[in-house]
Image (tube, rainbow, N blue to C red):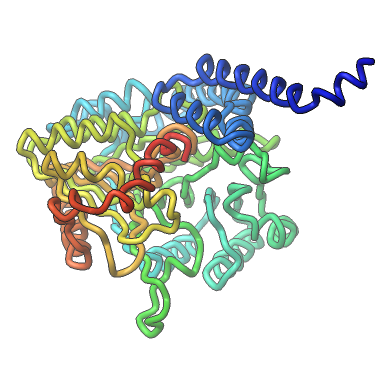
Length: 489
């Protein structure tokens, strides 16, 4: 009888079960998702894209690992920071001085000090590195000179010419007795997982994935990628910025068919490296059972550097109490008085950044945004374009880079404050990924980065607001739809 009833009414039963699941999922979205914009995007997707929307949310929208893993990491980070202060505070006190004056950006420096306990460091030597052809020779030379340790943390590491050259150098240094530790993102660096890990371990290199992914299609951990690019050598030299390890970042003048890749990286020599080292060690202690203790050898103080730039590090991720990188960018925009120059490859900023830029432009500031002419993701490209109209109406100048693909993540305000790092202007970088930015409070360095920005504008096309407004409805429709999904991208 029951079986007969089920057979006769199976369609209604399936529909009823689906509706029950949909209601439960929607209730979970409303209850679990803090951002109302993001909640609406998930609700829209689940209701109007049957089955696929629910599967997408269950796979990528629930913070399983953030709750189970990263809350624990946050506590460990705090304990390590306390140990760090107690054990090396006297050692680097001559270099770290929260009382240094960063001028008009003092409120930003104070915010990072209070939020992260990230100190404002003086006496740093900085070197701006454009593209892979400048970064990699510099990096290899520094590795060659390493005396105690080399720490690396990368999102993408490819087994190509430059990847092989760096691996060979690391193996050479490991065989010389140098401690080499390497964190790679399991999703972003499949070449390491499949081919290189055994070879490196056999050479004495300690290497671990940050968060191992077992089932790619339904792996919630894919949401929480370690997008950081950090190298620290002997606790005194550090590298960070947008450049991963891949041949595509190296431009060959003799190969005109190769896509030109514009990116920006930063070398730091001085106490600004110390907080990068703290980030690396806490990430290492999260993914490796063999913990690193906060010993002074990892926080070298070069007393030969008597003067230099003020540098502070901003970092955030699923283990952060606050979305610190988002807050630091907002504060930089709020504090600007004359000019804001932004370069980003992925621009899905959310309401907070959009409103801040519109207010700045309407207040008479010169606000310029440089984005790729063509993005490597059609959906992201469409979502980005959906934000342009509001900015153009407010008076923001938007430029599309056409020489190749611009992957740099930089911000310059008033020719004084500079930000270089790994974070894009999107929800993923602000809330889901582990990111790190270097903030420089110095006019001379800002002048360099400002010149680079305007040099890049020579290879870009400025959007004409009137032409942009008058595009066809059919051109704009996919962008409007993509914007609804932007909190989920």
